[in-house]
Amino acid sequence: MMKKKLLTLGLVSAMVCSIAACNKTNVTPAEPAATSEVTSVAVTPASEETSDFEIAAASEISAPVVAPDFAGDYHEEIAGRGNITITPTGEENQYNVTIHWGSSAFESAEWTMTATYYDSTGLLEYSDGTYFVRTYEDEEHYNDDVKYTDGGGCFWFEENGKLGWQSAESGVDGIDGSSFFVRNEYVDFEAE
Image (cartoon, rainbow, N blue to C red; front, side, top):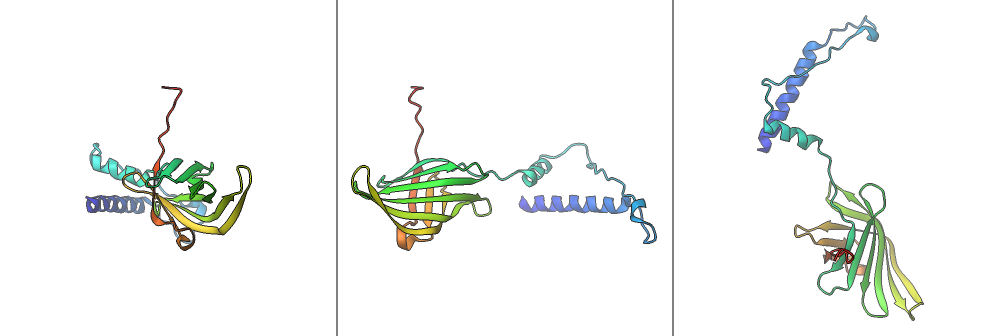
C-alpha cells in the first residue's frame, strides 16, 4: 500500500514538473530577467473524480503532527508513593514537570524540570532536571540536599496509556525506565 502511495506521488510530481517545463517561455541570456515570463500551470486530473487514495495521500502529507497531551497528574502504579504533575508552560509542546516520591514521613525525593515533546522521537525530553532529597525537621522546616542539576531524561506513553519515565542519571536517582505511572482520573465532585 505504501509503495503505491509513493509511486503515485512520484508520478504526479513528475507530471507537474514536465508540464511546468513545457510551459516556460525560453529566455536567452541577452534578455534582461524582467522580460521573462513563466506561464502559470494548472494541473487537472485525468478524470474529474478524485480517488479516496489521492485524498488520503494528500492529507498524510499536509497533516500537522499533534503531540500527545501529557498534562495531568499521575501516580506510580505499584507502591503509589511517586506522583508526577505535568503542566503546560504556554510554549508549544513544552511542559513543567514536578515529581514527588515519598520514602518516609520525614523524607522524600523531589525532581523538577522543563520538558519538550519531539515528534521525531515521540518522547517528552528534558535536560535541566534538578534532583534533591528533602528531609523534614518538623512540619514547617526542612533541608534540601541537591544530588544533581542539569540532569537529562525522558517520558513517554506506553501502548496501554501508562506514562514511562527514564533518567539519564539512573545511577544516582534510581529511575531506570522501569517506573510507570497511571494518570489520575479527574472527579468533578460538584457534578455528582
